[in-house]
Amino acid sequence: MARTQLLVAWRVLRRMVALALVWLCVCYVVFHFTQNVGGPFMAVPMQRTIVQTPDPHLRISTLEQSKASTTKLSATTTSKLSLALPLENDPQNFLNKDPHVDLSPSSSLAKYMSGISNMSNIPPAYWENGKKPPISSKSCVKYPQLYELTFNNLYWQTLSTHNGTFYIYGAYFDNRTRAGSVPLVRLLVMVDRIKPPPVMCQLWYDDAQFPTISSVKYTYAWYSKWGNYQDGILQPFVVTCKAPYINNKQRPPSSVSLVEKQCDKPMNNIRVVNQRPAVRQDFAVCVKGLDFLKADLSVRLVEWIELLGILGAKKIFMYELEIHPNISKVLRYYQDRGLVDLTPITLPGGQPNTPGLRHNFLKMKLTHKRQNELIPYNDCLYRNLYSYNYIILLDIDEVIMPVEHTSWKELMDAVVPLALKEKNYTRASYNVRNVYFLDDMLTGDDKHEVHEKGIPGYMHMLQHVYRAKNFTKPGSYVKCFHNVDRIVSVHNHFPLNCFGSCTTYSIDTSFAQLQHYRKDCVGALKNSCKNDFKVYTVRDTTIWRYKDELIKRATSALQVLGFFS
Image (tube, rainbow, N blue to C red; front, side, top):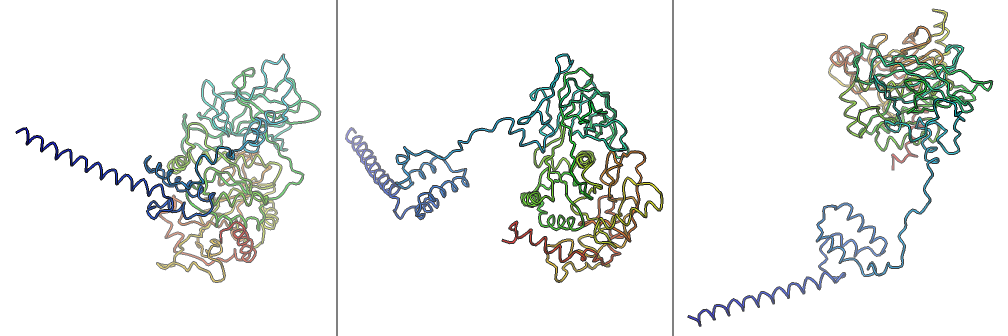
C-alpha cells in the first residue's frame, strides 16, 4: 500500500518537472525574440512601422500617431511596445536633453482684453493703457471694477432686478438728425419680461467727475402676434436713454451701465459704439448668426460673396454661431480682403451654447430663433449708422438682382426718384419681391436640366436659371434696402420701428427681384409649392450678365483656398 502511494507521488512530481522545463523553454523563446528588434517575428504593425522608418525622429512621430489612434490598447500591449523601441531611443540617451515647450512670457490681462476688444462689449477703460473716468469721491456711485461686472457669457452682461433679468449685448451712440436735439444711447437687450421694470442709465464720460443719470424708454423689437409673448421667455428690446454732451468737446459717453436706481452699484458696463469713417459708403449687407453645424456650404458661399461684391456691397457683416471648418476658411479669406466682417455671437440667458445642442435648440424652437436673430440684425444697423446709406438683410441663399440695371447703385438712383414722384417723402425702406429658383424646378413631371454648358458645375446660382413664374405675394418674404437714417429697429423682412412711420416703397419686379435659391419652398408654402411655384416656370438668365466676371473671381478664390488641390 505504501509502495503504491509512493509510486503515484513520483509520477506527479515527474510531470510537474516536465511542465516546468517546457515553460522555461517557452519563456526563453519569447524573451529572445521580443528583445531582438531586427528579428523576423515582429508581428505588431506599429512595431514594424518603427523598424522600417530610417529616421529616428520619424520613428517617434509614427509611434505617437499610432498611440493617438489606438487609445484602447491594453497596458500589457503598451508595455510590449515600449520594450520594442530602438536602442537609440533608450531613455538613458535623453538624460541631458530638454523637451521643446513654450517659454514665452504670459500676456498681461490688458493685452488679452485688447485682443477681444472687437468682439466683446467691455469698455476700453479695461484694456491696455485704458483710461478710466476721474470719478469724484463725492459721487454716490463709483466706476465699476472689471471683476465686479456680471457676465452671462463673453458677449452678454446682465442686470438682475426685482422683476426680471436683463441680458445686455451692445450700446451705440445715436445723434442722427431725426433722433432729436439731445443725442441718445441705444442698448440692445433681451429681457425675460414682456413689460420690463423701470431702470436707469449711468453714462460714463472719459473726462467727467460724475456719471450722467438718464431714464430709459423701451422699444419692443417684436410683434406679440408672432408668438412667445409671455413672461419667462427672453424678449428683444431697444433701450434708449438720453446722453447729452457735458462740455464743448461734444464727446459721447464711453460706456453705460443699466441700474434700477441712480445710485445703485453698477453690475454691468457696456462700451458705447460710435464708428465714424471718413467716407460714408452706399451698401452693407447684414447676415444673421450662421448655424451650419455639419453643412459645408463653402463653395456656394464663395459664389455668393463674389456676386454681392460685383453688385455693390462694400462689406458683408456676418455673425457666427457654429460653422463648418471650410466655411471658416472662406470667411477668413474674405476678412483679410476687407469684404467680410465676422463677429462671434452666443445666445443669452439659460439658452444652450454647447455646439450641437444649440443647433438642435434653434431648429426645434423656431420662434426663439427668430427672436434671437433680432440682436445681430440690429447690432449691424447700429454699428453702421454713419458708415453706410443702406443696409440689406440677406440670407446666404438670397440675392437682390437688378433687372434693368447692372448694380445696386444704378438701381437705387432710378428707384428713389420714382418713389418721391409717387409721394414726396423719403422712405424708410425699399422692398423687393421674392421669387424662387428651386433646385428641382419642374415642367409637368419632368425636371429641368441643371447643368448649363460652359458654366462650371460648382457655380450653383449660375447653373440654376429656371425660376417660378409666380412671385410670392406682395409684402411676403420681401427683403429691403433699409434707409439707415430713418430706422430705429429692423426685422428680417422689413423695418419694425422708425422715426415716424415705417414707410416702404415696393420696387417693381421689372426693376429688381429677390432671387431665392432653395431646395424647396419655406415651411408655410410647402403645401402649395408645387402648384403655385414649381409647375409654372420661366428660364431667367439675368444673372448671366455677370457670368464671366463671377466665374473668374470665384474660381480664383477657390484656387487660392485650395479647393481644387
